[in-house]
Length: 213
Image 1 (cartoon, rainbow, N blue to C red):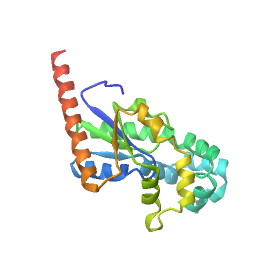
Image 2 (cartoon, rainbow, N blue to C red):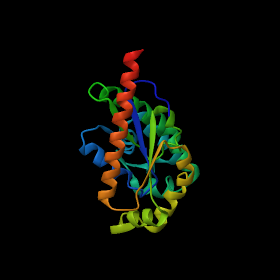
Image 3 (tube, rainbow, N blue to C red):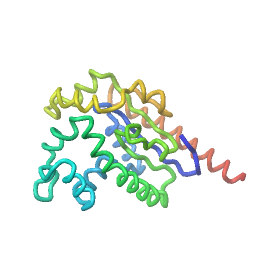
């Protein structure tokens, strides 16, 4: 956490199946901007010529089908293999970070608090970009159930993806806020309300401090 101004940059993170996306959807419903790092990453992978060339050079032409991302190939041959995850992230993350910075500046023209949803805040060493990091946490079995229900992922795919993420116990030591999400949607919404209340208070305090300087 590094509070630099009276504008707040908030990261929302959590391991696969934690419910961070649902948490962020509730934030969006309240009128706050949420930058989705995963969507940015997919867009950059698909449309950034330099990135595509690097990915093809590293992993082969099978990474794309014509101009579309070959999701099946990347899931099996890249994102399921730790060393390849590191390689592709080293290609994507600098561009994603830059885009997050650009979008945040744009949103700050009309908002005092901007959120970014990103699963790999700590894995990508992005925490210094934000004033506060919020971790959405849930028990392993709960996360597995959410991730594999209705055929979203196989249990093996869940296990592989989960293995590529830093464990919750480690992230809890670093996060500024931790919200457990083992319960109902109603409980999760209440936690969103609590976070917003806290952040509005922090924003107001920062503004008051700034006006006195």
